[in-house]
Each structure stands twice: as C-alpha cells, then as structure tokens.
Length: 122
Image (cartoon, rainbow, N blue to C red):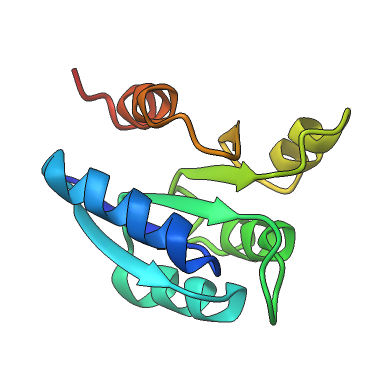
C-alpha cells in the first residue's frame, strides 16, 4: 500500500488522519512542521503528501514550492489541507504546486476519494 506523509501541526488532526489512513492500509509518516515535512519528503520519497498550509517554521505554500522545484521530489503528489476556504485559496495552493486541495475540517470520505484518484487506487 502507498506511503503517505502527513505534514500537520495540529495533534488532533494528525491523530485522526493517521489512524484512519492506517486503518485503510496506508503506511503513514508524520511531520509536525513545514521544515520537517520538507526534509522527510526528500529523505523518504512518500507516494503522497497531505500538507497543511498553515505550519510553523515553513508554511505549506513554501514547502510545496520547494518540493516541486527539485527533480527528486517534483513528482510527489501534494494535497493541500487548509482551514482557509476563502476565495483564491485553492488557486494559491495549486499555484504553489499542490496537485489538489481540500478544506478542514476534513471530510475523510471526500479526502479518500482525492487520495485514490491521485494514486490510481480503486
């Protein structure tokens, strides 16, 4: 099963996402800030990144821009997760290099559909 890197500073969100993804058979790695997420993506090359956009140290937009700028990480799909549901936030995330966008609170069924679509799962 695919490896997913969750980059999320909120403990409750990390816990909910990781438990549900593990239950569905995914391998899960966790980073609690943008810099750690960036570094783990380079080191571990996950199959997908769930990236909170409001992170300490380095925000999600910068993480996405940096990962998409490097040959070794540019093909890793990124789904932006954000409580920012303002007009233009989806576009801002996609412009930073994210492959998709979802809002918080997370609707797991909807997010799982996006994960499956990106990873080509049935």
